[in-house]
Image (cartoon, rainbow, N blue to C red):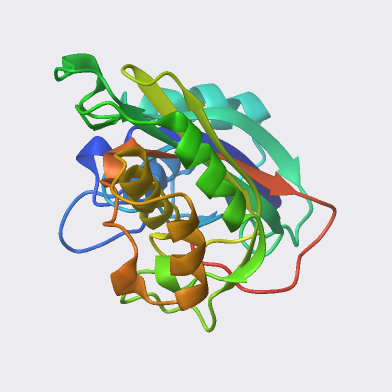
Amino acid sequence: MARVKLVLEYDGTNYVGWQIQQNGSSVQGRVQLALQQLLGEPVPIFAAGRTDSGVHARGQVVAFDSPRQLPLKAYWMGLNSLLPDDIAVVKAEEVRPDFDPRRWSKGKRYRYLVSNRRSRSPHRRHTHWEIFLPLALGPMQEASKHLLGRHDFSAFRAADCQAAHAMREIGKVDVTGTAGDEIAVVVEGTAFLKHMVRNIVGSLMEIGRARQPPTWLKDVLDGRDRTKAGSTAPPHGLSLEEVFYGEGPRDGDAHDD
């Protein structure tokens, strides 16, 4: 029995999130259904992390144990013929039997997109948070530096986050783009709390709108009080871009936005 690793890309607009739930269609459910059709029996799959309703992915990683010996192209081309248009396998490979996409993850990269045009954009409505007032990139870039390193990110976790603690390490926060057009916030870290990236983005937008100075973000971080931070950015601007791996499992716990 071979363990197969898949890299998935999906548009999360029409799904309740990655994880199977009772209240609607999930990405996990659609992938497992396609696998069952391909392999002739139910096959559980395990993911690098959960994405919320409306959140997208370009690099979600999953693994499963295949009961049949098939060529790798069957898990790529075959599954894509069975999956809906908004979910696709972009890579398939056989991995070690003990590979675990969650436990082996060394970190993740998320990208959040903001449309800063003066009017709404029909082409961006499912992939960008539309903010019509001009944003100041310089102050957001200055503020983002306060997030780098290992900190207690309690101020940026969801109220119902189940993680045992809020200590997380962020290695990169880039704010790029053009005020008045598209702005991207890219965050890389070893692990994330529930809604952590979206809460960071919501707080950066307070600074971009000149409602708060760049130093305010450090005060929020140090204060560890979620009520002092900005609002949670809408889910549809967020995409899981890549999951990073080494040669084996890592220590610590994680929860994905």
